Every structure is written in structure tokens, then in C-alpha cells.
Length: 119
Image 1 (cartoon, rainbow, N blue to C red):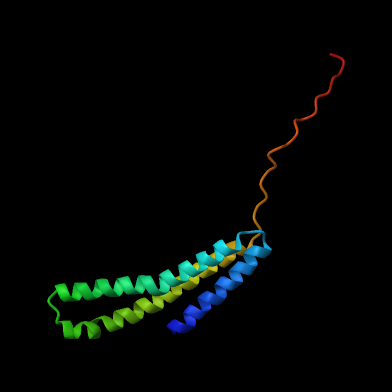
Image 2 (cartoon, rainbow, N blue to C red):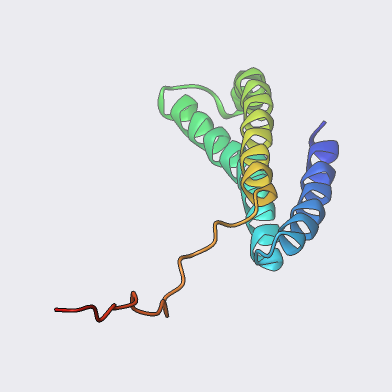
């Protein structure tokens, strides 16, 4: 599951790049943002949470031989939640990138015309 999800992040990054480029946005920035969101949620967050759980288990008096057994089930749940959060982040980025940017008002607008009537 993890490998398929990481491949999905790479495919989504390529898609975000193309979509951003077609809509006049910075393609490399959005592709890197997509990769960052995907890898942080799928690799970094589960690793940190797993380490915290293992440390808590060890400090609560658990044996080092039992750490893997005790952390295995929560780690699996954390993995699924992380993939879900990554998918939500990817969806939000793709939704934002697919919209064309709002046009900014022109800064060099000529002044309004003045009419010289019979004053």
C-alpha cells in the first residue's frame, strides 16, 4: 500500500505541474509542494509518531523485545490515516491549481475623463 501511495504522489506531482503550467501558475513550485505534502504525510509523520509511541512504551516500563509487537497495530492505523491525509492534501492542491488565477486589477489605470462644460 505504501509504495502504491508514493507512486500516486509522484503521478499527482506531474499532473499538478502540467495543470499549473497550463493555467499560468508556477509549475515547478506546485509540483514540489505536492511532493512535499505527500512525502511528509506518508513518511515523516508516521515515522515520528511511531518513534514517539515506542519511546512512550519504553518509558512506561515495557520491554525492548515487545516494542515492535506493541507499536505494530497503532503504526498500521497511523499509516492508513497518513495516506488519507496525504490524499486530502493532494486533492486540495490539485483543486487550487486547476483554477485559473484571478486577474489582478491593472495598476496603470488612466484617470477618469474630465469634462469642461460651461462653468
